[in-house]
Structures are given as C-alpha cells and as structure tokens.
Length: 425
Image (tube, rainbow, N blue to C red):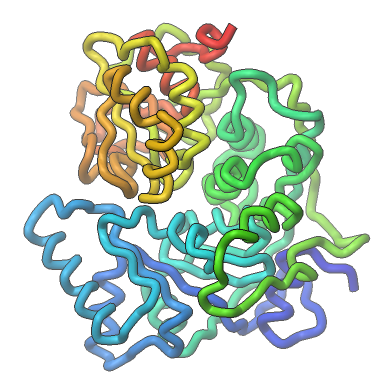
C-alpha cells in the first residue's frame, strides 16, 4: 500500500510493513527532547519513580526559556536539571549559553531524515523540515518515553500545502506563507493531521525557511509538519557529524507514488504579500496594508520560528543605514550560539546594534513572556513568534501582531506596522 511520510515513519518504528491514517501503533522513538520549563517537572517525576533514560544518547534537554534564570525558583529548577544530566551522563544536555532546545539537536546532527522525534514541546513539528516526524507530547508521555523508548501514536492523515511558483516575491518570507496557510485553514483546520509543504517554491527554500513552515504547523492544529527530504537537507547534514550513529532513512522521508492525502491546498507564490496575524488569533491574518500605520512600542525578532541566521539577515537588510524609531524597542534574540557566531562573522550583529537594536543572549527570548522583553498592558508589539493570544508575551492587555523578520524590522524603523517592501524598493 502506498504510504505518506508520516505513515512510513510510524510503520517502520512500529515494526510494521504498512499502516494507515487513524490506526494506533506503538513505536520506538529515535530521540526525545525537552526544555527547562517542563523539564524540571519531568526530572522530578523521574527522580520520584526512580526512572532513568533507557538510552542516554536518545534524550536531549536544553535550558532556553528562562535564561539566564529570572528568579531564584527558575535558578533552582535549572540546577535540578543540571544534576540529573550529570548523574545520568547525558551527552546531549545544553546549558544556558547554547541556545534553543529545538535548534540545538538540528545543529548537532541529531535530527536525520526518517526519524521519529517526540518531544515535550508542541513546536517539535519543526523537525519535519529535515524529513523527520517531530510531534509534541505531554510530560507523563515523556516520562514513559524516557523509561522505555516507546509510546503509542495515532497515525495522522496528511494535508498537503503546495506552493506554486519559482520563488517568493521580494519582501515575502516563509513566515508570510505559513500565516496565509493559517488564514485559509483556521486554527483548527489541520487538527491531528500532518501538514506537508511541497511545490516548486518550497523546494527552492533553504532549510531555515522550511523550519519556519514546519514550526508553525501546530498553530493550525497539526500533529506534525513535514517537507520531503532532498538535496537541501543532504547539503546541511554533510558537514555535521552523526553523534548517535543512527544514520539517515531517506526511504522513509519521501512519499510513495500514489500515497493518499486528505486534501491539497494550493497557493501561488507570486500572489503572496507580507502578512500579519492580528491579535488575539494566529488565524486572523490580513495583508500588512490593512494594518499599516498601527503604532507599536516594541518589535521582537527571535523564537524557534524566526531566530535563525537567515531571519537576522533579513532584518539587517532593512535596518542597515537606518535607526529604530524613537519610542520603539527592538529586541533581537538569536536562537543559538552557532547563529550568533555566524551573524558576527557576516556583520549582521553590528548592523543590528548600529540601528539601535538590543541583541540579547541566545534562547527563546521574549516569546513566552517570562524574560528578555516582557510586555506591559499598554504595549503593542510586532513579533516573529508563533502565537499572539492574550498574555503570551506578558500582560494580557498587550497586543501582539505576528509577522516576518522583514516586516518586524520595517515596523521598528517606521514606528508603526509597515510593509517591508517600502524599504526594499
């Protein structure tokens, strides 16, 4: 029976020849990930139950949300996790100077095509950019995985998003594509499905842009997001060691001819423009022109959605030779140490600083509203994050507009929501 990427990966990891959407299987994971906000609960449960990792090489934990620690309680939680990592000699523990816990496994070569990677973060869907199946799970499920390496899964159907055209227009980014998908599908339009991105425009995207697409698949209810693995993935992995020696399963990372899809959504790249999600919903998406001129007090560029090198480069292209508007705070949080080092080499950090941006340490930054840019009730923020519901970045009365790095940078310069194409013409 022809199968989709999701079906093939789950079948292989369950030891079955074939599976179909809706079927339940018990599958073995290749890797499990968690972070500091939920990791300390996970560690305490494991300590109480006397549970340790079934395979320490297949567990990655990173401190990235509350970094540096913003209060004594979070500092203590970090130390609880550090002690667990030391005791079990976890080779893939990442402390506060490393970066986002989803980005680090990718950079370290732990994420490979055909893998099954459940994690204690809904945005594990991001791993699908490399042809893996990344799915978010809860703390108790993570405890089970940590102890046994296995977990029950329901095989999801696949919805295809096909983006036609040679490439995206100037000033339009992957974030605009996925926001348009949210507008068309709604926040529950892909519930417990795999959202697969394909088509000529997607094939022409770099890995980082594909990560943005897959990262936000969960925002329309998807269980996973995926792009078929190809030469872009092979090139990225060619210079990265496979520390666990698991190798790639390329045959699992591509759909079979004749595979069955629930539906196909077709977008035309040439017709896309910069998009903005209006608070308080991710799917309340409009063309930037409809909200152009809305005053802002803060712009944030970062998060596991848009804190990578290409994102910072897009912002720097707008900001070079310009200054952030008076009364606006531009906060930039690079996603990892690797991103920072590359951005320094390419002069991007200098451009951001000269424009008046505050460049913070690595990690999640202001995205979850706990440090590095918390919003007040009267703040209006344009952010490159993945969610804009009340209280996401701090005060519940603050307003959050979701946008691409180019749109966020243009808005920071203008002092209000602005079309980035105004600075690229």
